[in-house]
Image (tube, rainbow, N blue to C red; front, side):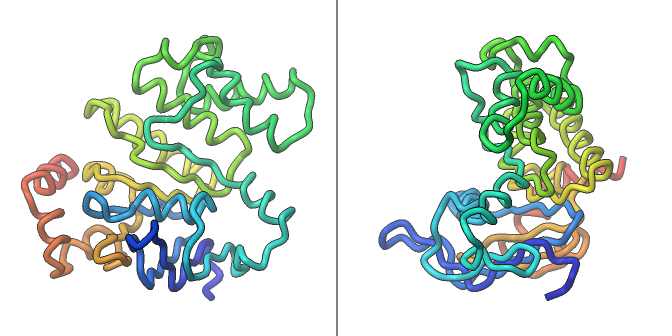
Length: 257
C-alpha cells in the first residue's frame, strides 16, 4: 500500500436484510486530501461513511487505517482510532439539551480524563476555531441559526484534534453565502491543521471550490475517483449528467468568474 493512503476500503459489501447497498466497493483516501463523495439519491453515500466509521457492520470486505485492518485491531486500538476521528453528521446532530460549550465538551468527557476547567478552555478554543463568537458557547442549539449550528457541530468534531474529518452534507440547508463561507472554513482548517477530509455532498460549488478529488458512487461501487477536471471527462452517463447539467454549468461558471 502506498504510504500516502490513510484509509483503504477493499471488497466492501453492505446490506440491510436482502437490500444490498454496496457490492465489491474499493476506495482509497489519501493523507491530507479533501475527498468529495457524490452519488445519486439512495446510492449509499452516508451508509459508506458510517461503515468506515464503524457505525454499520459490513457483510464482507476490509477497511484499513495506515495499512492495519480494523478487524485486526484490539478494542483499545479501535477506541484510540475513534478518538482521532471528527464527525459532522447531517443536520449537525447536536444534543438539544446541552449548550454549545457542553456539546463540544462531550467528546472530551468520553475519551479523556481531564479537569473540567481545562475542558471548558479547550471547548472555547474550538468554538473560536469554528468561527463562532465566544458568546455562542452559552447558547442552546435552538437559539442558533442554521449556519451557527453547523459551526457548533464542527467545533465538536474538532474537539479531540482529529486526524480525519468526516462531513455529511455540511452545506445542506445553508444559503449560498453561508455555504461558501463554510467551504472556505473547511479548506482553511484542512490546510492549517493537516486534516484529511471525507465530505459527503451534493453541493457542486463545494466540489469545485475545495475538493482535491471526487469519488462517484454508482452501481453499488466507486465508479470513478479523480480530480474534478478529469472526472468531468469521464463518459459514464450519470457523471456526465451530474457535472454537465444546468447546475453543473452554473457551478463551473461561479468558480471561473
